[in-house]
Image (cartoon, rainbow, N blue to C red; front, side, top):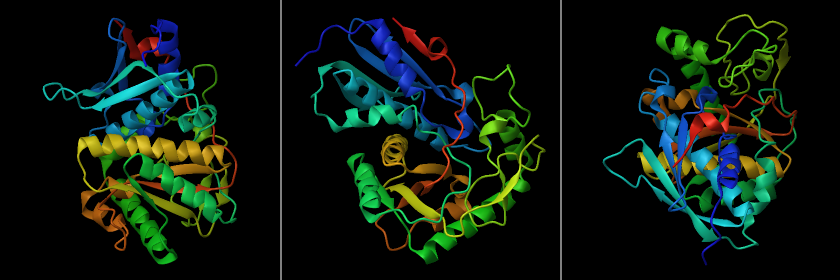
Length: 329
């Protein structure tokens, strides 16, 4: 059933929720274009916000844009719109990642509606988590969330979790010797207090969390050895709860699906009272990425490593205003 004509204010609200999605170094590598005559909203990659040293294949860029696309779907459904999505609709335009037809009417009992309140509550938490176990029913629910987006979520056993931690530390050492990667990270990570001049992208010092005593948790130290005023140190959980999100194939369309799945899992975790942080460090080095996957799983390509648990919510990170990322035609 066709829904009433969509006005610009509703589209602005959808895009505002979409841009609350996570992205690598909070670079926010997306643009939107709404065509009023057709009711179609298009999502584009903003290559000026790509990270060529850290993310040379733009895999992480696609993950971030996929997460924004999922938030857009949730916002649309919550407003009574049924978003019909086409991935990569134009082979001649590789920066056009998806188009969303918003002319349909959504079912009032669509389960995506329940995730809308979590969009603004979802933040990366780079703080220590409690040692408490995550109930099996919640784990199963997160795995279902990933499956609904065409991906797999696996909680590796203790042996493989330790192996993933070793690979994270391997990647940290590689990054320490990669001047280009370190310089690129420094462009997006602030080490000085924000004050009143808060940038509209990147990661503020307040969101870095404490430095880690030991190396028990896969929390990326984005400060890269730089001094952060007022930043303390803390021990992290000894046995972090790690989950691997992956796909059967490893193409741009799979990265977009993985980004949607990542955000669906994260919003569900937030609704369940969990907090999370991400690490992509071992996935950014082709020499070791293959070793992250669980050899007992059908998952062929790991797209993200999640750390889940109970603990303090993370600090919000800034977002660019919708006027900078949305064009209405």
